[in-house]
Image (spheres, rainbow, N blue to C red):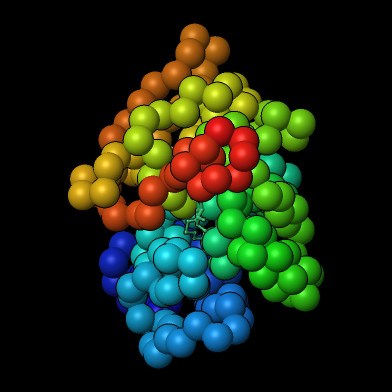
Amino acid sequence: MVRVLRAYGIRDARVLAAMGRIPREAFIPEGVCVDDVYGDHPLPIGHGQTISQPYIVAYMTELVEAAPGRKILEIGTGSGYQAAVLAELGASVFSLEMVPELVKHARAVLQARGYAVTVRLGDGYEGWPEEAPFDAIIGTCAADEIPITLCRQLVIGGQLVLPIGGVDQQRIVIIRRDVTGFTRTEDLPVRFVPMVHAGHRGTGRG
Ligand code: SAH
């Protein structure tokens, strides 16, 4: 898998080494059947959700510059795999997930492996105001538009990296916060599951 990532242009040796150390299969919930966990494609984790293909995990990890001393918010914990990659690189990670079973699963796996990740059941569109500001925010589900609430939870100099768009057309968008405001850069075309508005899941919060 690491060889493929390098061939696709992932250059950050720290990211490659971190992903080489983390067993992907450990993050697949029990009862979900997959073969070829190390292929460059998404993996099912139940509840209609997936772990992104390794290339996208590596690419987004590079963009949020995960490193010791950096505080990173993830939207969409899912299996906990992306959060583990960020934590393996030394970042302190906060991660929001809206499916209770996945919160439970991810907490257990991350804790068993000793990662500094705090997982909470919550709506990604609201971010995590009590822990803000963050050095970076990474979204692993696609929002229909840029959530301004999340932008405001960045430090000056911080970046929000998240897929924006509908089911068929999405791009990774990078929002940087500086003293004068926000700048937006459109990046790779991608395909993620949608960032669901809480009201539509019947969580009673929308
Ligand atoms: N990062 C994950 C992949 C997550 S898939 C991993 O490495 O396994 C996207 C996740 O986003 C799903 O688990 C989905 O339940 C969650 N999600 C979707 N909308 C959300 C929202 N509004 N708030 C929080 N999580 C959300």
